[in-house]
Length: 474
Image (cartoon, rainbow, N blue to C red; front, top):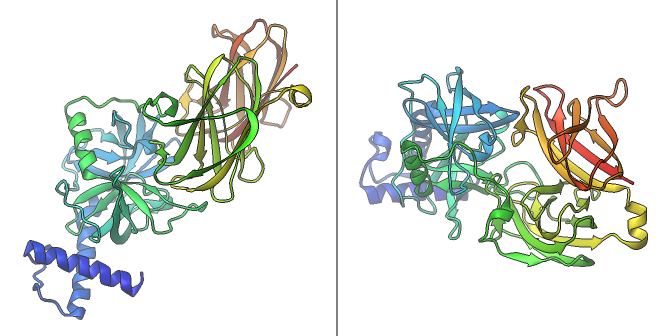
């Protein structure tokens, strides 16, 4: 931390003391402090905040995801981020003293804020974090974050409130927040919760560069009231942005024209991971083959294509070469499609190029074998089959008599692939296509003109990670 930043922190702290007319943290320091005394005061304030709050900060683990949380009720009610526990019903809770308990995910914010609560089963007399008063946060005041970045539980960082976002109300802080801090508390100098840490700003790196964001106490209190009154839903709101009628969308021409776009902090934001996105729509017919590419030197592009009925057609991260994204798909329905031009990391901003075109003529002939090319991750957002294994579902339109080949590959888990028709009848399944190879493949002739469902699954309950699904048809 620079000397200038230290001075700012001390100045902000002393200013708050002067306004309140009290001694710091009950430590008995006079209001008029010399520089050496101010440094001692600053250190004692920081130590006092950690000792007061850290016993009530927990680590959360489940389905390959990790995060942090704050105990806000002595019976074990934990406040955290929705994206930490989304699609989970039970999580492992690790207390500050090392005890491991089981927690049940019991509520999500119904408006789509990145908030959720976990209830520790059979708990009582646990330490809690008190709340700051609504409207008490000021730019320049000290801020303290506790959490489990990269799995290091009980990590403590300090900084100031750098900004309060006037549009989204988020608290911006330079206190270091990294992956794993999500859901943990942002505190004031009295050890009171002023926000829930939810995202970092980065330019393609996974770590903190001095800009983090927290959901403020003013937005947290209504959610907890809904929890206490039994009004909070037990499942997260559908994160599909195409269902949000308040979104501003742009028309996307399928003529190969290159669109120059930009993601910035004023754009739409995914509630699940706080990443920014632009929304596009276009009209198309069933059976049309399209190619959509998104490239950028500033951010890691991520594309999501949604069908007229709200189902996901495809999503992609790196199929366009390097970090660029590309979707190649045969569209399943007539109507208006919705495209999300997104960033893979939360908080990424910068310029990008977007290009969409219909494949016909010679292009369609060369690429006609592709029905769908899809990258994904089997993890915290996946659903579970009856045997407890994770799965995700993809769909494509097939024709009667069409021969299709489906291939599922993963460097991280033992794949299992299932193909079913519109009535749920199983047409094929496969575990290992060849001996000694954990990838899966199905070859089948389709019986009817209809939309078929592909189940991307892992062979075991523990399987999770990256995958690529490729469907070719003739």
